[in-house]
Image (cartoon, rainbow, N blue to C red; front, top):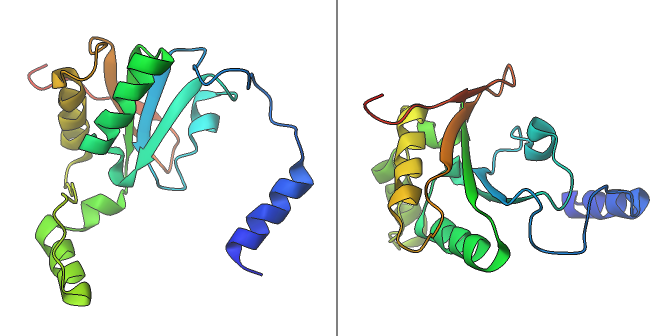
Length: 167
């Protein structure tokens, strides 16, 4: 049995027991949460969310990329979100690679060098600050005032807000 088969079996056994409002794609809390794809970051549990309250956007590192700006623009302009919560975390895989090393590895394996940025980082707080600034500076987003960034500690479960540069 593959992992996908296991997940499909769980879904079948679970049935329709997920709490929350499914009547609209517009999040009732009007917030978009941008975070890492890491399986230890359990967004719904961390924030006590129920279905329908928030958009949850995920990628490697939880960094604000052009594609995240695209998703946030749709979330804000078409689906009513007004706040952005960025959550990166301790012990992230992106802090364990470098831009050039990973691109070299991919180029060696495929013969093609990626044109996209890996967004590797060493200090998670600096990465959070960069992501917050990218949201605040994006002309595609009408709601840029209520953007906050946090680091989630994967061992303790605590959230620590990251102050903007210079504070």
